[in-house]
Amino acid sequence: MQTYLFVFIVSFLCIHNQNCLPCHSEQDNSDYAVNCTATIYAGENCSDSFLFGQYEDLYEQLYWSEKPDDLMLKPIQLEYSDSNNLYPGFFVEIKPPRSASIKDVKGFQFNYQEEGNVKKCVIIILSNASLDHNHRENNLKLVVKLWPMHGGKNFLFTAWSLPKPPEDESGGNQTRYGKTGKYGLGLTDGSADWVTTLSYHNDVKDRYIRVWFLHALDRYSFSEYMVTLEMIISGEDTSEEHRNVIEEIKISKADYTFINVKQGRYRVFVQPYDDKWNSLNDCRCKSELGRGCTQCVKTMTAVIVVPRSEDVVMTSELQSSTASTSQSQKTAAETDQTINHVLPTVLGFVAFLLVVVIIVGCYLLHKERDQSKLQHKQPEPTKNNICRPNIFLTESTNVNDDDASINIIFHPPSEIRSEDLSLGNLMDQVYQVNADYLPGNDKNEIPSHEFCQ
Ligand SMILES: *[C@@H]1O[C@H](CO)[C@@H](O)[C@H](O)[C@H]1NC(C)=O
Ligand SMILES: *[C@@H]1O[C@H](CO)[C@@H](O)[C@H](O)[C@H]1NC(C)=O
Ligand SMILES: *[C@@H]1O[C@H](CO)[C@@H](O)[C@H](O)[C@H]1NC(C)=O
Ligand SMILES: *[C@@H]1O[C@H](CO)[C@@H](O)[C@H](O)[C@H]1NC(C)=O
Image (cartoon, rainbow, N blue to C red; front, top):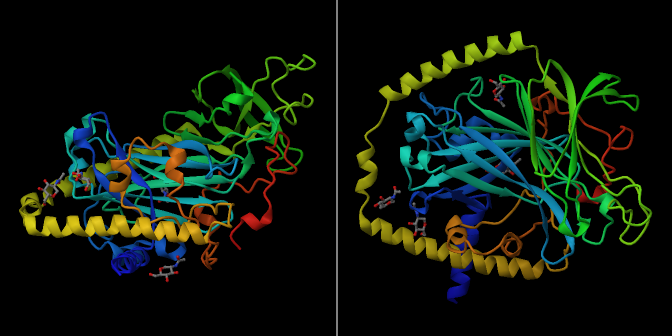
């Protein structure tokens, strides 16, 4: 009887709360850990006016927070519940602003859009925490796990602090790009077919392009990777695309920064390096385990646009002037924080009970759904995930990613194709790249049934 009661309460909360993603904080000193919740919305529900209805003190406010100090997409490629298949995704890591305005930050929003797909947004709320210099000095960051995601796709991520700046405010966001590796890559696939998941940052102000990627599985025994920056000369996005190699480097770490990048249109490539490519049997890039030698797949980014430096100087001056105005507004608007600390302990106890109920309920719900979904071995890309209060995550920090992923529930595709699917929101750097006809493509084959229809 009690079980049903719990499930009832929790499923109500989960529906009400739409969809939750795993969220936790990372920091040098665990005294400064914060709890967070991450909720995902899609399509028109990502508008400020809709979100104002959900979080009324965080949207359409007179005063807003400075942009996050950093946004980082940490590529991951994890096995889905002993299926022997790897799926790509990202840990999205957000650092609060470094200035005194860290005090005003109540959460973060990040949007992401996959080419040709509906815009998604994730709202991260810091529960019962106000940030200060201690959090900053201990390198606090909020981490949301977005996994699994479609393979071979280009993504654009944009992040804001909450309260969020108005939609037309420029310079209030951080942007990063991502490219996912193979969807459902079999652990038995040949080493040559392994495709990295990568993320990159195009810093137009300081004129560098930084790329982070994922090393291949140990069993493929690659130790080095070729990372290449190529400038597009002509025929962009056609089979005739002609490019010049600007810089090529062989590295063993998993990130690299191209500096002093001049104006132009570029792509970055990452390819495992086969140090024994010319030996008969010892090569590392094999089409199938134990079979012949071939070339390893090269992962290619979307087009990266580096503007003229004159254009950048103008915009960044504009940005810094607007930033300082909104900051001074904020100081004037600093509210009396003490009110927040007078919450009666009784309320705290009730909240604690509620938390317990949520944890137990979510767990039972998961179990139940897990069982009913057992026949679905293929995970659906992140959109309707679990409702898991992050407390659960903090208390089981020793659980590794693979174990943790077992708790994830995958719903059947239920996404409504939004009418306002506006590709215009994707910056023009992100192109639909047809993997079939571009040279140096990543050979990704994605069965159509894996897409949301
Ligand atoms: C986060 O939640 C856990 C479990 O309820 C609690 O013990 C911890 O004090 C919370 N941390 C903060 C900073 O509120
Ligand atoms: C937007 O939210 C409403 C409920 O608030 C929901 O019914 C609708 O499906 C959501 N739309 C999208 C595109 O997710
Ligand atoms: C969380 O809330 C409790 C009770 O209201 C309060 O005592 C505590 O200081 C809060 N923690 C933070 C980090 O704000
Ligand atoms: C993010 O900021 C840039 C630079 O100020 C601006 O051009 C862009 O429109 C902003 N993006 C979004 C989605 O608001």
